[in-house]
Length: 464
Ligand SMILES: [Zn+2]
Image 1 (cartoon, rainbow, N blue to C red):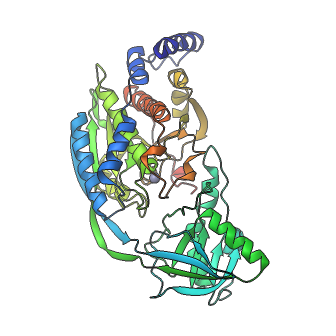
Image 2 (cartoon, rainbow, N blue to C red; image 1 turned 180 degrees about the vertical axis):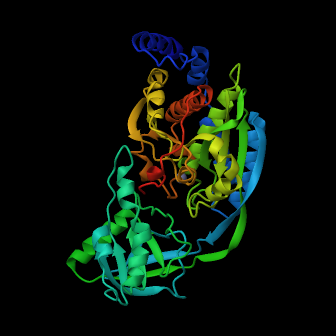
Image 3 (cartoon, rainbow, N blue to C red; image 1 turned 90 degrees about the horizontal axis):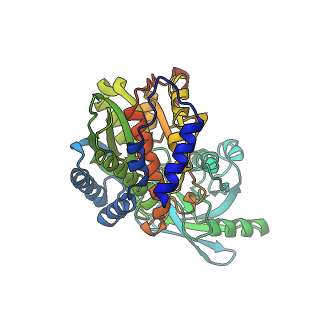
């Protein structure tokens, strides 16, 4: 039934819209295959998470993930499967405890931010001072919080496009810096998330180590501290025992679907192999890993491979350093002019909604001509510029054009960076649509001869 509906939708769309004469009509059998085949994306994501578990850089799980990726890419039939060495930070969480000790005693659900230093033995105990916006945080005076614990309570807005995260996530970087500058002995933030679970969200500080201990409270616990503060002074005790080990050896894992006519021209599909340590990284970014491996496998199942090479790169260390992306860009610097486009899937398992491009301006019309090919998936082409993913932003800075498959992320930040990021949160129906969309975009970019050019100089840096 699905195939019949798709065929009639395709016929109507191709009959009613004209495509640029420079490009051939989408080859219908290829799209039919890519958009109707059973997807293995959920099976692949589940296999990674169950095989490797949590896989923060330098952990035993991160090494298991590399082994899994090499074996899986080989089994799926990718060519030139290999690892590329990456030196990664190795931060280990340790114990974490927090409680309000006055008024009353309230144990709090807390987790260290990645890169936090430890508290002194026995922890710290101090009066809490609340700050409720990034603007106030930025305006703190030096020494104004001497001996206090800074509480940065900045709520995140739920949004289908994830814009609430962009507005708020800077608190993880800013609060420890401003707290230290103001003389605070520690900082706790309201978790950057949209749920009401008593599960704190971790995330990187933006530096290898903080100057003061830094942790996130679950959102209900942040609300509790806020209510208590509205009635009077609050004292909080915090104990964290993380440590920063010597840098470790990690790896990017790379495999190709070799182009049949232009093998030197590369369309890069990226996702990150590492995850935070609290859950098993099913949505962040097991889903992305499953989707791009499934898309590559789908391309290998076509009667003829695309003209250009489609390269799968599973990056190391996205979460706390981007060392994998930097190592890939350095190792492949001579090839980057032939990287025609890069696409990263790293926004959970929600449905694809739209596609965007960032390239030379003339490429937009060619990508807009993909609309009829994407319409059966209920995906449209936006005119706004792509941003690229965190890893591919390093390639963007080198001028490599970016393609975004924008997803519905309205539920993603309920579990992002928490112990709840586990495989049961993956919806196979949504992940199948995302995988089919990714395969379609990869095929169009690799099969058609679109000249994406380079990202114009002023647009090579991401806004956030
Ligand atoms: Zn991620």
